[in-house]
Length: 533
Ligand SMILES: Cc1cc2nc3c(=O)[nH]c(=O)nc-3n(C[C@H](O)[C@H](O)[C@H](O)COP(=O)(O)OP(=O)(O)OC[C@H]3O[C@@H](n4cnc5c(N)ncnc54)[C@H](O)[C@@H]3O)c2cc1C
Image (cartoon, rainbow, N blue to C red; front, side):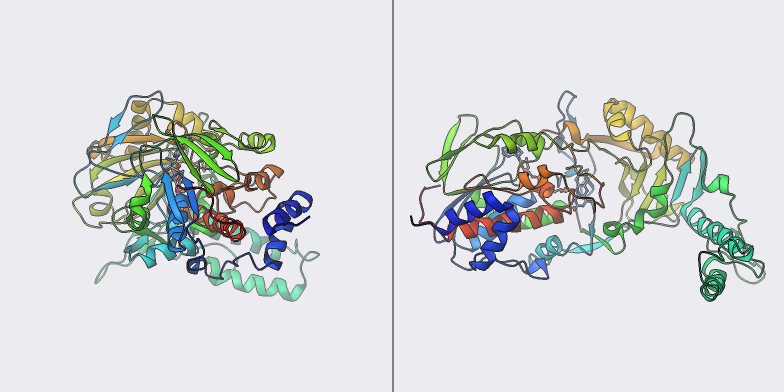
């Protein structure tokens, strides 16, 4: 019996799993190794040889797939349900309509030039694949200020600047450690020479005096700032433990840990970036290269296997489109509801992971945070239901800006995203106005034109992204459903942020698209062109 390379790979995959199939692909010279810099990804030129691919979804994964496939000589059609590209990269500007399932529509009325990144808003410098497309297509980038020591924290009703919280926490912790060393409590745990080195290090590191007492030298701020002539600075006194770790208010289930470490999380660390003018600029730049291939307002209803290829039923008229291969990038909650010739295991896996239902809220306002309070970008944190306030990083010193008064991700209140999403539009706006008033007394009246986007009820998304075990910085092992989800169904392969270890990031969408493209490429190397798209 003769066995094609595709047949062989399917058998190896069935017996040894996808990992074994990859090893076999590499051995057969079919796998295109991802370059160390994922920004250099490219399929072999002309390797498509006229074969046809239908891509489901024109988010980042779908757009990247379309761009790379057409460059390699495939015939590509992208089917997109919405009237716009970008998916969860959704930059809202004046005139845009916000549709939410079961809620009244909203229309943004921001002034010209202002925008609200209601989905993706920041890119860490480590996300080389998505930044590579920005560079390739000359998308101007600017710094996204992801932390700001002048921004304030509002916990249990007390408001303090971040610089005071962060620096006093370090001072107090160092003071405790110095006490433990000086009272010889650590003699059994750490060799003497090392203890001496640690003790010496703590003095400049955390502003301890000779006795090991934390004495702020100004890093946490001043009660009187240094001026000219006789105006000497006076540092603020240190906050107490109960002020640094306030007991959550009875109504709040707040956690202080995330604000203290937020900008230390691997993909939240400086330098963070954003495209000038709105996050959708990268998606739009890719779209500009593949526009004729993309059909908007074309929801996919059925995903079928037909002969050796695929058959996609789509659009209001249930039109049929056949092709050799399909790359499916639909989010899991949406895909689970599409009729598809998938294995029972795939169908079960599609229902096994929750998507976070976070809400974002934004208002237009004069930039009082800059003019009156010297806050340029960054985040304020709170144990109120809005969880944080994000100050704009672009347009410093412009007369107005869009203030994102909530991106509730469960950072300071673990069960909050659903609870906040359950509120009415007006209730969410009220929570945010009260929070801004607490952080900036007298200023909430400057805010207007408020809009809210709840991602759990956003059609064609139904959530922020896949919540795999271990959270956003997951190093926890993935459940078996994960591998099942990226296992191809014959000529149908899968991509999307949920199929990556950079989940809920654009980077994950790009990297998963690259993996899907490698699979298509390996299959195409086996087969003559079959169907016409
Ligand atoms: C609130 C929020 C904050 C985020 N913050 C960041 C951030 O700061 N930085 C960052 O990099 N990422 C962020 N992300 C994540 C990032 O936006 C996503 O990971 C990424 O955009 C996902 O791309 P995708 O192509 O996998 O999926 P999607 O963008 O969801 O694309 C899927 C496409 O399929 C379409 N579709 C759905 N159903 C059908 C159907 N039946 N027929 C046809 N088409 C269909 C959708 O309309 C959509 O266009 C955030 C996301 C959200 C929601």
